[in-house]
Image (cartoon, rainbow, N blue to C red; front, side, top):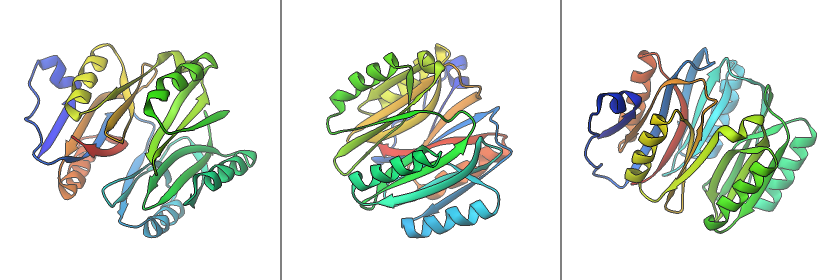
Amino acid sequence: MKRKLSTLLIAAGLSLPATLSADHVWVGVFAKNTPFKTQGFESRKYFTGFAEAIKARWKQGYTLYDLEQGYHRWMGIFVKGGNYTSQAFTSRRDIEKFMKIVSIRQKQGFSLTDVEWGNGRWVGIFSKGKGLGEQAFNVFFELEKFPVLIRNAYKQGMKLDKVTYGDGRWLAVFSKDPAWKDQLITMSEHFDALQRDLKKKWAKGYQVVDLEYGFGTWIAVYSKKSKYTHESVDAINDFEEYYRDIVKRWKEGFHLIDLADGQN
């Protein structure tokens, strides 16, 4: 069963589909007016296999735009025409060792553009390209501390790039950006609450640029500076149907801009 959220539903005043029957949902954020020329999608059960998929896509001229791990599956959006000029990745089981690699990569001129935890490992995607600058990182255990970290980052002129949960802790990635004032972040305990939040923020001119789920909480990152149009969010129980939906959306002229999965 698919649940679709879109600005078209808001404008038409239509109701959303009934509650999904299963607890777990695969989520895709779609939009038009992206900088991408073409996209690819890869999925593997184990990261060792996904790592080979990354290398194969790099040889084909793609860069990894978004990485997601959940429900025994690694997934990625690969693009041509994005802002990244070169990439690297690393995998470590210990967060302290992982952060040491992050520091090394920073000295090499890379930015941490994505991070996920799954199958007992932290995986980081490092990129060079336009719009990538100074970064700051916070590792914390209690989600209640997150709003304070966000406010402190805003005071320093930094916006939230990424937050992910794994191995009993959270990792937040911030970066210097003059557009931090146009960012908004919300947290919802259930997908239905996230759904209502999306509708309200779209009505106020925000676009969702990142969805994350961890420890029973959906986190949505919104921006008013996004150039995306016709944004919509699809949530589907079955992975095969989820992939068919992605292909269908491509044929309709949409691009996939974010992957997420979590519980209702």
